[in-house]
Structure formats: structure tokens, C-alpha cells
Image (cartoon, rainbow, N blue to C red; front, side, top):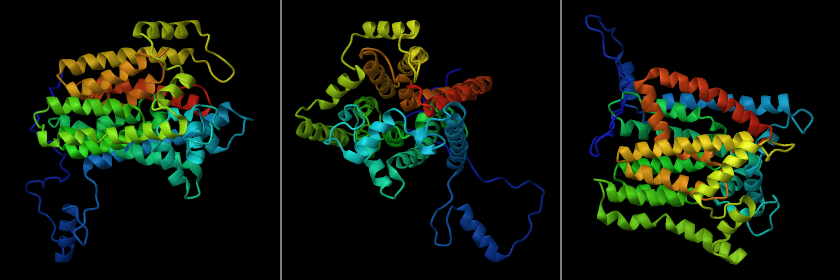
Length: 421
């Protein structure tokens, strides 16, 4: 059974926190001062009338966030101790310094104009995360630990807004939002919501931005999308999806059209900066081609290359066997196409544009990889899975039975230096 999207003018229901009094049961009398304090607590305000207690959706979401973060951090210590003994362990921060984290660390420490100390073309990475790592690292914990802290906070913010977005889209499902957040936290590639990667920070900006767009708050939405554009190139696809959402929304306001140009400012600014230090407006794309073989390739050729890598296993070495990862990419591509078909069937044009643009970007490279991580950005996927779990509880239990072990395997692979997307 498919739950239809909430009407554009329908406001989300919020789960009630108050318990009704039982009929026929006499309530004990309390002192007047105590009643006053209870009234302030019930209204969400303290002595000065300032709200401090989060609502039920937020509390439940943060509860799942905390439990899942504890699990990830336990794996960050135990996996290296079990599988990488004798290789600079148990230095806990060494477990987090894997793959792209080294590139972000290099940018945080040296910027873009001091060579390529990480051994990769640093222009391939947008500045939002590494410069924030530098800022947090100034507290004395260093850029890697700073990146872990950023992802820790950002994943909490993103989880809360994913829950709110899910509740807004399906207000008829009581206390539905936290279920979507739980499914997202336990995603097979959920380790990248904890590692110093861009996924958590991007989602912490994209999810509230899209919620604002669905509510018709276009200026607020454009501001969040513009900030997301500083974090990763996916922000450009999100900006395009925002335009589609605006054009197809019943809440569009033509006076808000100029706001839609706001996300172009950080993108053009980054391009101009790279032009100044590297001599090319397209230094980002050139770096992607040089370091990651992301030159334009016909989709069917890209798919053939990926199938070849997934079947022959010739991308294996001392540090990692990539065959299993390419197989996961093919599974993810199938999931993405199913999701896209569902969104088109529901006339969810903005979300469909977002997913379609992401898939198109990955299937036009030499081969498909890192699409598994990109699924974390697809809020319609996690909300859709939550709808299935709500309507068919056994599917929700089956999802957790499969996703949690996969998430543990993925995390162990990442923390021990194996290629994991």
C-alpha cells in the first residue's frame, strides 16, 4: 500500500506528549508553586519563559542518534585492534584518517595553493568541510578530530530535520519521523555519517533546506542550499532540484525567484578562486579527471566498465579488494533507479530531479563508484523505506536485520583502511 504525499497546504501533525487523565481517578492536590512550575514545564518554558525541552520527535530521534554513534565509535576502536594489530594501532585517530580524510586534512592544514601534500589533486574537494575542520581544529584537537566532531553534530542536526521532513510529508502517520531517522542512521554506509566526510555536513544543510522549500519558504531554502554548495558538488544538483520544486509547487511565489540564484554565488566564488591559483575555471573537474577518472563517459560504457570491475576482480591489492565495492555500486544503481521510478510515479518532481541528477553524474564517469555513499543524501529513499516499515512492520524488521550487520562490516572495512566507497 502506498501512502500518498501530503497535500501542499496540509501542515504536519506533531506527536502529542501529554497523557490524558484517567476518568474517575482523583488527581492529588499539589502546592500552588509546584503547579506553576509544572505549567511552565508543560508549555516548554523555564522560569524566564524560554523553551529548552525538545519535543517528542526530536528526543526520540536524538536517542537513536546517540545509540548509533556509540556503536560506530566502538567499532572505530575494536576493528583496528582486531584486524590491524602492529600497524600504528591503537591510535584511535589513526582509524579515522582514511582515504578522503587525508585530503580534507591537507586542505585544512595547507589550503589549496601549497601543492598537493596528500598526493591527490586537492582542487577536487569543495572547501566547506576542510575549512570548518581547520576552524574546529584551532581548539587544540586537530583537524581530524575536528572533522569527527563536525560529523557528530551534523548527523544529529540532519537526523532531526529528516524526521521533521518525513513527518511533514506524511502527517497522517503518527510519530513517523523518528522511524525515518532510525533507518537513515543504520544505513549500510552509515559510517560516513560519523567519519570526517562531507555527507553528514551536507545533509545537515540539505534536509532543512528542502523542508523549507516544501513549506514555501524559498529564501530560507535557497540559503541552506547555498551553504550546501560550499560542501560538495552535489549542491549544484540540489540547486537545480530546488528550481524544479519551485516551478512545480503550489506554494511558489514569483517574488522569491531571485532567491533561487543564491546557490550560484558560492559555486562561482570557488571556481574564481581556483582560476586564480590554478589558472582554470574548471580546475575542479580537471582534478576529478586526473585523480578519479571522472572524465565524461557514455552511460552504457560506464556500466560495462563497472560490471567488468565487479566480476573479474582485477582491482585487488594488499590494502583492499575493490571487487565487492563495485558489486555494491551496481546494487545501489538498481535501488536508485527504483527510487526514481517511484518518485516520478508520485509526481514528486523536485525529489525526482535530485535523484536523477545524482545518478546521472555517477553513470557518466569511467566507472560507477561512491554512489553507495551518495545514497545518504537521498532523503526520499529513507522516508520511503520508513513508509514501507510503517505499513509492513516485518519489512522494517527485515531491513534492520540486514542493514545493521552490513553497517558494521562497512565500518570495520573503513576503520581498517579497506576501500569502502
